[in-house]
Image (cartoon, rainbow, N blue to C red; front, side, top):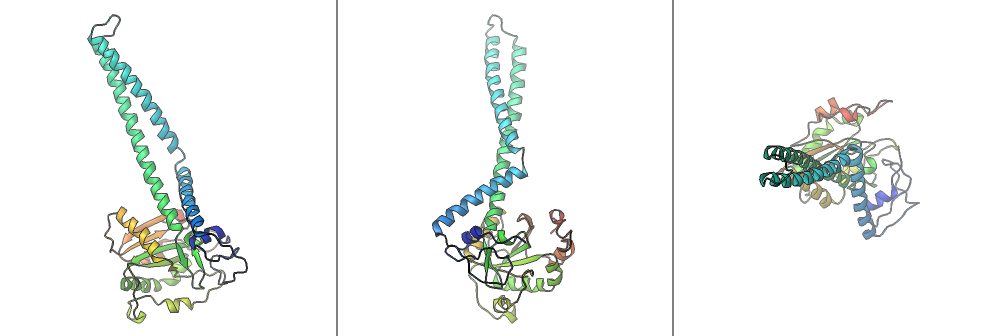
Length: 309
């Protein structure tokens, strides 16, 4: 496993000390080697990195998109010029100018040029629209990777620091519904842990206190007492700075025309891409049955093809 990216972790927690060269799930909390960055510098740098990474991912995912976009734009311009020339020739034909083509020939030429212009302009507008949508999708995923979670050991990390090691499932709901969903996931904990699934419960609105035994809230006190080895992954991580998580989820709900109070879940692949999402509580049994086991030489090999949940 690769060590934590110290600059990325610093961007996640402005002004906080970041341990350099530690494993993402290490239980060690030593701060023998730390760096501190000004909050303003971190915020601006993080925003630039998100935008740059999103554009790079877009280019990798669609290597010929730029060619189609600007190629269709150039050909559209040529078709537009040809249409103007054809219009002038048609006017000359109608006026019976010397040496002019017949009206029928000029009209046919103009029709062909206008048809080409319409097709090429349509391709250009479609590519431009798709480019914007693809970029927004990648920017949302990159922004998600910047959000911070806390491990049972007390260490904090950005999602991008653990995405290569785990398949995250984000669940957002009220306190009671969230605790019920986590309790349901615990029933499949062994199977889900074998598949490197980590649950990220995000409480909608302000977190409330309650009796964990009554299923009203998640028992974070017992969670913090979990002891993990260096290679063991936690089953549950705690979101840090809830308002940032709620803002990101709110934007996704608005994009999908989902009610802001609705319970939703989002499943991520190991590379941080969104595998799937839905309303209500996740079907943990389907996760356990369809996601490949994260063990052995081929562990996670089918992660790009397990898109059913």
